[in-house]
Image (cartoon, rainbow, N blue to C red; front, side, top):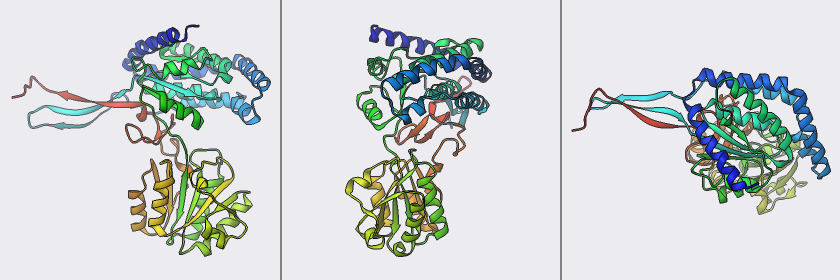
Length: 418
């Protein structure tokens, strides 16, 4: 296969389809989503057979159990994909919304209309259910999309793509509005991220290595985050019960997510009182603690932390612990080591909470709440395409609105500028 020619064809077809999707009505796009849900339900046997091929190939190539688990399409996961499509169909449509309409002294009216981005390229690994999640959000927000899943899920993704094509066709939308790349050749990714003529934005979903490569090589704008080095700071004015509940939940509710706490910061004024309580709770959960010198003076059975620990996303039951010089020390540490994902303060002092919100430069900043709430569903977005730690366009959980832009619209009645 001539990869460059193939990807150019995919890009042109996506660009053509984007026009049709952008001018479609909410009812038509919802019909496509619901028809896709029905197609998935009817194709359970085909999906299972395709997924079995991927699983067999994965075992033969030595994929570990965690990867195989993410790859598997169980009946429950198919149910979840179907339910996800129905939920996205029920979400409010952001496209065409006009806001901030004002009369100008000249007599014209000026406002801003929400519009699709155009063509969105999404690159992801292992989990075939992401194919449905990504396609549904892009379609609902009026965009065409090009999906490049992991090579280990090629058969599953193509089976899902067939269901998406049936749903689009039934709604009268071009099947090329959602295209799943048919080749496992990695050159396809290199082409996808360097086609600004056809692709308006790239969203990478996967490991740090993948995202670093996309960020480095892309000639198309990228919505992404690299690490989830999230902090919880327990202030000297914290309620101990809240501190215990929030810190433990932030770390142990799930270990392998980007919004899991990786570093616990404790004000030196209360460290000797609250650290033993926190350490006991974490030990009960099987969490390994790695502490700074001042932490080791209070907790003698803790491993000494290295400088690398402050900059590590463990995604495991390991937690770095540091005693800091009050709020200034906490903010300084966070702004030095944070990945600008999510950071939380536990305090009953309103003034300190406001300072933390103002001075911590992350995409989500919280007061007395678990970092695990940094999620599109929990924020009321309905669903998310990912998390962005960038500062331009979208920041934090990226839902439907994050997959759109705005343009100015002007209404006049024969007005001319003098």
